[in-house]
Length: 180
Image 1 (tube, helix red, strand yellow):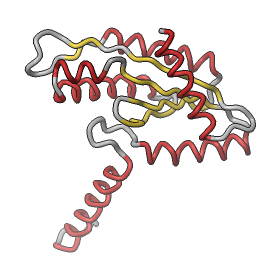
Image 2 (spheres, helix red, strand yellow):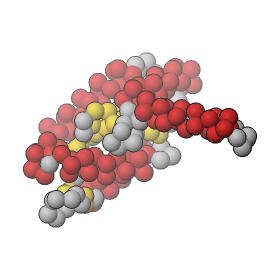
Image 3 (tube, helix red, strand yellow):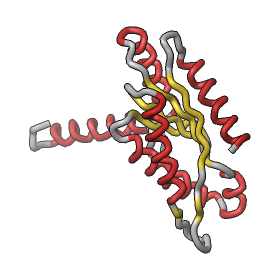
Image 4 (cartoon, one colour):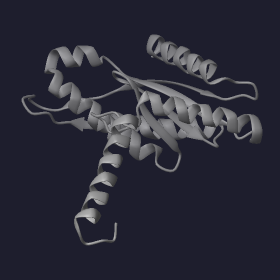
């Protein structure tokens, strides 16, 4: 790598290609957040860590409200802009608190590491308020697009499995969407 010849350049190219492939496998192309595959790997590691250390964590699933209606009204490019702007807010809000992943479509998974439910819910509310204050500008759309989201959050327990935690967070999300 330190060589200043053709072999050194080839080594640098291989490293760049390796990093690019790593990103393709672990990141969502549109939002640049972790993808579902990597989130599942990280959740499995946290589940194992919980059983050995007892370190609890909280899982939230969030869904952009009325995303399909907005997509139909403003177009898919505007929908992509909404997803990218939402991802920026989620990434910023989760820095130092855990991680966020695009779970699918307009759904996002947030994992608050080493945190009890009250603290995680407080951080989540801060993120939610920032999302509500966001005004997305998209080419071809007159004015701004306002975003709201619904979340379901749960805390892990001693015998919690990843699948169970996801199911409960999803149930809470559904309840939040149904009841406001």
